[in-house]
Length: 176
View (cartoon, rainbow, N blue to C red):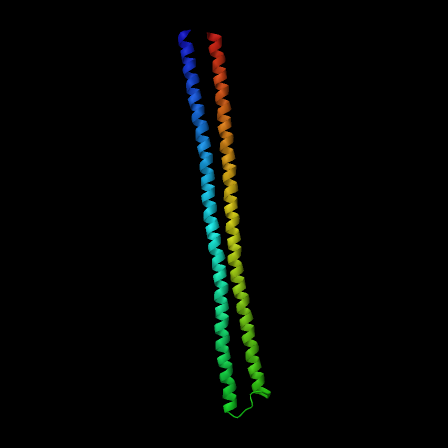
């Protein structure tokens, strides 16, 4: 009878140690899940900021490209007007004026097309930034869900351990 009580007592002690280890391990895993989620969110937020900066940079470059184009076109248009005048043609009426107007219209179309392209590229970069931010938020939601799962595992292990210890205690009481 004495050995049975000793063995049951040892079993209860081991069950308590196992339960404590399971609870501690699950809690630690939950903390690690949150830490990993926070890390992934920080990376996604950083990448989103970079994409936003690239969008702003693309817009600034587009503005500079437009300025350069306008300056170059202005010079070309002035040369064309000068060439007409040197040849003795009046550049402010008739065919020369129509040619200069057509050139100006085409240049304005090119500028508008360039603006549209810049706006599209910048919009795509901003859309990428939004996607990255959402990805970071999803990482945190997943991390919280994993932590909740680990917390549930810890509580389950605790209740299972307590139930085993109560059962073992009841057996000891019957023997003793």
